[in-house]
Length: 434
Image (tube, rainbow, N blue to C red):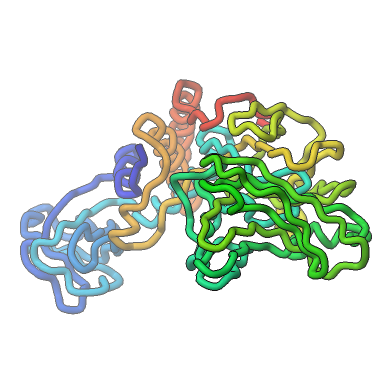
C-alpha cells in the first residue's frame, strides 16, 4: 500500500527523537496579512519558546504551507512567522509546530529515495516487452493514445473511426479498433520512413519489407495488411473472420528507388478490424540499437521470445547485450543473429516515485510505493540525511552531537536493511547487473 508524504514526514520527525511535534488548532483568526497563528492553549509555555521552529498549516486556505517562526508571545498564544502565509490564518485551522523545517524533510526524503535505490535497498521491479527484433514501426503495440488517435498512426477513409480497445487485445494493455464507414474502406497506416532506423538501410528499394501484425475480425474478407511504396501495393490474406486473433503478414519488394514505404491495416466498408503487436522488418537488415523505454532504468536481464505465435511464449536469456548513453539518449544494444519479429523482454528496476515538494494539500497527499514495513527503511535514511545536513550547517564546535546521531541512524538503517525489508521487485529473478 502506498504511503503519503504527510505520513512519511511525521515518521521522520518522530525518528529524529529530539524533534518535537505539536498538533494544534487556532482559537482565533491571525492578522489579516497572514503573519500570525494564534492558539490560546499555548499560553503559559513561555515567551520565545517556539522561536526558529516551524509552523505548518494543515487545513484552511494555507493548507500545506509552512513558515519559520520568528517570535512567540505566551499570553494569548501568538506565533509570528518570518514570511507571511499566502492568506490570513482563520479561526479553527489545524496546524503543527515542529523543530525541523518540513521543506528540509521533504528534500531529505527525496534524497533518501535516491540513496536507497543506489544501494539496491528500495526499488520498483519492472518488466518491459515493447521492443521487437528489427522492428521499424513506432508505437507498434498501440499503447500510446492521445486526442482520439494512436501516436504515429494515420486514419483514412470516409466515415471511418479508430478507438482504443482496452478489453480485447493481443499484447500490452490495449489495441487499435478500426471501423470503416458504410461507403468506403478504411486504412490505418504508418510511414515506415519515420523510424530513425530506416535511414540506416542501404538501398531500401532493393530490399524486401515484411509487415506482420495480430489482427482480429468477426467476419471474413474484412481486415488485411498492406504495404505500399506509393507505386506498388502488396496485400496480404484476409482475416478468416473466426472471431479471434490471427497473425497476418505481407511482403513488398519495391524494386527501385523509393521515397516512402507505408504499412497499413485495411478494413472493408462497414467492417471493424483490430490490430495489435505489429512489426515491419527488412530482410537482411539488422537493427542493433533500440531506444530504451522510459518505463525501465537499470536493466538486469534481457531475454527473447521463443515462439512468436504464442501469447504465453517462454523467453530465453541472451548474452552480448549492452546499455549505452549518447547525448542523454539511453539505448539497448542487441547482438546480431536474433530472429526478426520476435519480442524482447527486459527485466530491471526504477526508482520510487518522488514526493511533490509543493507546499499544498495536494503535495501532502502525494504518494510513493512503500508499505508500512519498507517505509521504515526510507524513514531511517531520511533522518540520517537530515542529521548529516544539520552537522554540516552547525558551527564547528557544535557538530559532534549531530554527527554522532547521524552515525547511530546509519547503524539502525544498516541493521534494518539487512533484514526482510528489502523491496522485492515485480520480477523475482537474478539480475545480471545487480
